[in-house]
Length: 309
Image 1: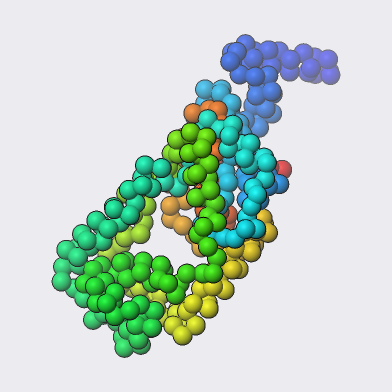
Image 2: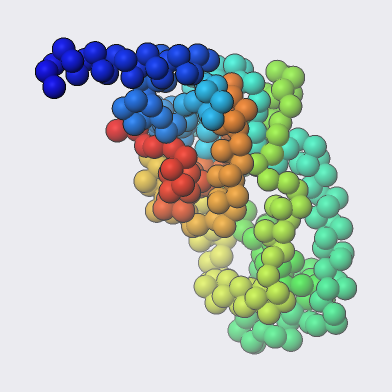
């Protein structure tokens, strides 16, 4: 087949495709013709900002911005880049880890679940299953009154208390939380905040597993703790994570974070925003977007996105 004939055939194919998909742009037809119809994931220059763009199954164009956040920080986080703020303002919908309505109910629901944990413990006592060394570490981190109360509940309550104890708090402040910033920004812009997961799903991830599995996790945490240096070690870990975030380098952040089982579910939710079309702005913890089991990794594995060349 000579060159002119090949071009004629090619143009004919394009014409047929265009006629059959009149609601789809010529650029999309061209993209599909050459096998590039899979939505593209791009890492933006702005810190921990990604963009997914493409066309959904209805031929409707969509853009999903993903802003990785961090829950504590200092003044170095601000001001945010203009492109981030512009994308937020221009979005058709805003999505966080929890919806605004679920976030308001979080404290009450957690309290109720903690109370229910007493009956689920069925009379078992956590501290009776700990070694003398593990108990000693526990008493160096939590006060006796707290331990006496929590020991009658399921072990996940003790784990949560350890992670949120005053000694576990870093010198970085939640007053600079990017999640809080975007929540306030959404209120100013009169934008509803949707959730990547429900409140029940998030609480389930905190209190998951059998009593024995939770107890095993608690013992593992205590085993890895040097109680005398607990605060110092927590501060060091938090600072390293924060500096990795500030660097804007996903690889550095990946080295300091662990896998999260929720990422697969989040990936399915992100896909649902493709089908809605328009522009979606998602903000959630940066660790969910980096690594071999990140939200993006699941989407790529499923063929839902392709990485930027």
